[in-house]
Image (cartoon, rainbow, N blue to C red; front, side, top):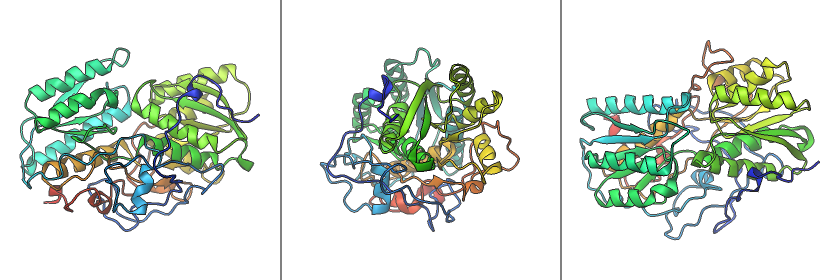
Length: 429
């Protein structure tokens, strides 16, 4: 049976094709580059690239670039933009006068539902405290979190964002529930001189964003894992996060693109698990109770690999290949133990590294380094059985929710420099 994308989720819109076709065959980043922050060791990590075509590849067009902001960006870095559904804009912060602050910073984010969102908050607090010692920020780190995942909405986040604006912050870090729903508010705040640094791209010239896109994160992990299936054939379970939020929408676009390259792969089920390992374990166990058939691989939207593996082990079923995006220490420990016989694939990048990248870009922007564009997509780095030990945490067991070890630079300074008119960072002083 071929993969026909049956079901309501699989019929969602695919990534729009843009100006030029740009087939993404991932090459590794950071191979002699220093990390811009503590987001990596700066050392080379060896791993395979994605397949150039067919099952195991990830196609993705470059986004439309009407203002030509990608001119001069290296081919290595352009990989990160493949498949991204974003509106590229020239940054409104390209001519900010160089200055040393101090600045007041706020944080608007989703509820703390698991280890990833907690890690974001903890890392931003850590970076704020370090910057305060350098005299770059002042006051307290102003935090506004939506309280309940069952009732969160764009309107609720908008209210919290505007509350931060009214408190007189100079910049707001945002984990947007709906990036599209925040564009007008970000524009209005930007016109008042407030920078928004986002964990998902926002289509505003007043926003800055620097991460591996969710399309690349989930899509690359899925493609590389599917590429391990014998003869490109097998049965696959898809595990979703939260409906309606950007990591789910964009991540699923990447997964669909990877699955479309594997016509002999059958999707046997789709379940939701809220981007948390605990929920994923329960949801997968429930699915397995009603599905006795074989499963060769599981692809997921991020942060749930450990729970998925634990579910199969708990019910005594063979653990399939589980795509490792947003992968925690538990799944990496299982993988490292069984690397001779278990060969999925993942994408490097812990929530701490993602937070570091956003923080670095925000401080560069505020200090007048001249941001060139609103979206600064980073090329992903693959984790394979050859380099998995670089990312494991010593002593972690197979149930650990802890983040992966840095393993490789996530936001190398030389790549971040491409997105600014002036190189360097005030964080190194």
